[in-house]
Image: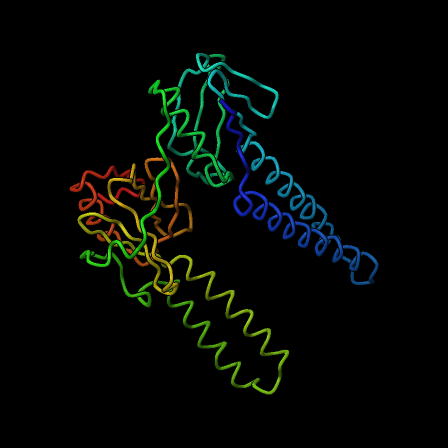
Length: 313
């Protein structure tokens, strides 16, 4: 067979790394620039030397981000007989001690994300974060059916149904009014303020461009947290309060697992993992604790596995 080779995600790896590095460099140059400016001025004080360790800390943070992203997304190649990491280390499938296809692994600091973990008999463990790859699901699917189950063939991938298929379905939606949520309130307060500013600056094109750009950033940035879920007898659908065009539909029979997740300052999130190990992440800030409890009971009653990491009950 042709080996399956991993590919890093453009947005999950390269874009994330580029933006984080750019921010660190910008903060670093601002910090060292401020130090140089103060050092050359008569207003320089001894405490201003504190900007130097601050600059070093920012650069160290950037190096740490590089290290963790690369460490948690090793290059992978798999075939019938072995798995190779970073084109250097090769193990036979018989060398594996434990396989965890879905679970959590440390990402940045105390932050954990969905990952595959492979532990080998020589004591080495490799962690692969789902979001850092564009095709890790293909490798998971291969390992599940050819390595674990010893099946001759790998099943076809799951194709998401057309939303038109579910037009006659009766969905029970789990959501709350977005203005009952901090992010929803913040969004519409920002847009209202920017709308007023736009009216006051209607004759200033440059100002309008700036206001419009910030309004778009606020709208898309905060609306990203406002997903909600609907369940019918045959389907699960994910929609967004403000992205009216989003209709992510899943057949219940195609779902391997639903995860309820909460990370640090993020809202509770719903992660849908399909039978081919594709993973989709939806922050659901408008859902309350009791909504997650009811949703969990609903899914379990339909024989959908639920990994409840927020302890909804």
